[in-house]
Image (cartoon, rainbow, N blue to C red; front, side):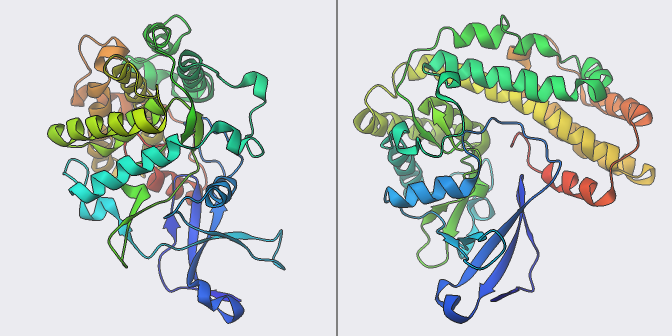
Length: 369
């Protein structure tokens, strides 16, 4: 039916993708992507849906354009579901983080937020994985759920292995506690209507199409039903717009959302910093843990080469989150390097080489789940 292309496998945070050329009766579909879940991958974000394909199929039924089509290959094992391959390149290749987007690109991104805001949560009732009684119903409950996930499923899970590293870096569970600073700010949130959120909208997940230069949106693994301001905060945190363009995006976002989903931009100036504080704290735990796996997998002869890269990522994340973390003084680069070097000596044996290689690749983007 199809043959692997002579090109590298695409690596995602949660799946490996193989690009194949469709043949025979499927030739008109062009190139396709087949995904394989990477075992043992740490998840740093909650999920509302079992898999990305369910989200994409529902979005297609709702008429959303410029998302990857999903095909079910009947006759294959478990009737394999594959994605159409979007011919183009990531926006990050043309506009690296920290650089400005074109006016057209900015307009398209705001338009995407508007499309998501127009989707009622009930449209995804059949594929939503969380029992209704456990779902948050207010903005306060939504942020509290995110904080609780990071406390229980990220920090607590990794604490037995990384306690000495957490202690050396002066980060701990206080910031994530039910009475901590993030939770206190969550209690002050203004309620906004919920809608579908992409959950991971950054430059690598926006593809500039070869055909017309317009943007396609990929990687819906972390889609959620929740407060639209969280999607905006995640986007700003990961995109790293120049200040002037960030301000322009905020104004355009608020105008669009007020029309499409009235009330969704309420208290924007007060509540956006609260979500951004959570994202910055979450990124610290994400980067500390991912970099621990990378360092653990590094052969002794290469440790001196790896540690500066680890320090740059972790120290940068800690500086951005210093205030919500309650760090009057962020540990300097030398202190961060010393913490990882000391932990390396006492770390348990590494996992199998293939898994470690995947962890290393997954750790190349700061702050992302």
